Amino acid sequence: MALTPSNMLPLGTQAPDFKLLDVVDNKEKSLKTLSSSTATVIMFICNHCPFVKHIQKELVKLANDYLSKGIAFVAISSNDVENYPDDSPQKMKEVAAEFHYSFPYLYDETQNVAKAYQAACTPDFYVFDGNLKCIYRGQLDDSRPGNDIPVTGKDLRGVLDCVLSKKPIPQDQKPSIGCNIKWK
Image 1 (cartoon, rainbow, N blue to C red):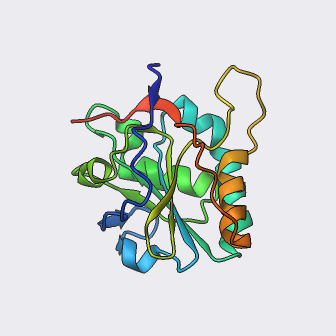
Image 2 (image 1 turned 30 degrees about the vertical axis):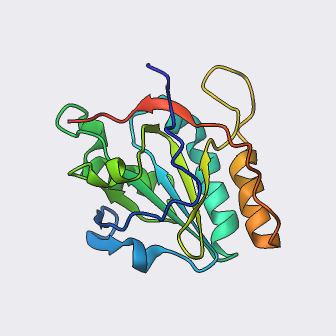
Image 3 (image 1 turned 45 degrees about the vertical axis):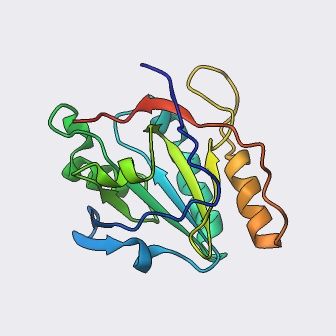
């Protein structure tokens, strides 16, 4: 597996709008309808990536911990499903059910949304404020497959706690590292 870091979208960037298929309920969803006036977490993930599999349970726990506090979560898969059939919409729906995703799992078939967000890897995380300006982009935490660091979500949790307590967001943000997005 190739290690690919985030591109680190410039802070303050306006979240690119999108309309994508939610594989769970088979309905098209837009950023406008999914975003929160508190904060919105956009996650580029996929089914087959060992980096995503490594954090999957914590991702669900983290979302469940913060959804009730008014923070929205959106997962997007942009991988080429022809060459990576485990990332197909049907398989996405199965994974969402298996792990009890409490957030939409959207399919970016054209890969235009991943390109608009400058997403580079899975997982890749972005946090946007209530005005949909980027306030964080980077890693969930320091854990990676095989490094024996527990998966806690501390980096992302720290940012969300700052949002909720109206404290400044740390500017020292580490890029996420994972598998590259599988471009067509």
